[in-house]
Image 1 (cartoon, rainbow, N blue to C red):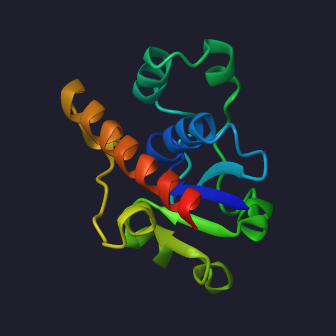
Image 2: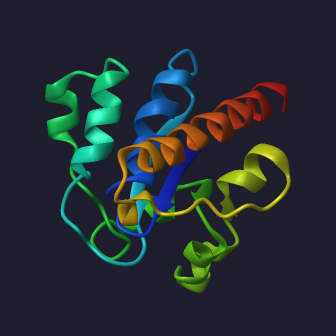
Length: 150
């Protein structure tokens, strides 16, 4: 199964999901996990996301190797994905029609109910930024349980 996490810029939420979910599911070699952006290219992972991932034990070299991808320069990621998991319903609306049938939000994939996950890029306070990323942890854990039971 090929899982693609998407957010607006592939700088905060989706790379966080890619790293954390890949680690969480490392005993599932049948899963391909990647990320991309659907709206605007910022270039690389946000330094605050890198900080949180570094605090969780991800190696600096691995974090520095990450390169943001976007729907227009990496359409193969979207083509290959079995499921495209966005952080809000708006991410699905930004996809070309050919990929929309693969789209769901992380909250829906995890719990069956929709809740938009705010973009932490706009957060000025570290506590709020980190809280959003930790909210992703909860959804990723629930999504992992869904994959294991189905």
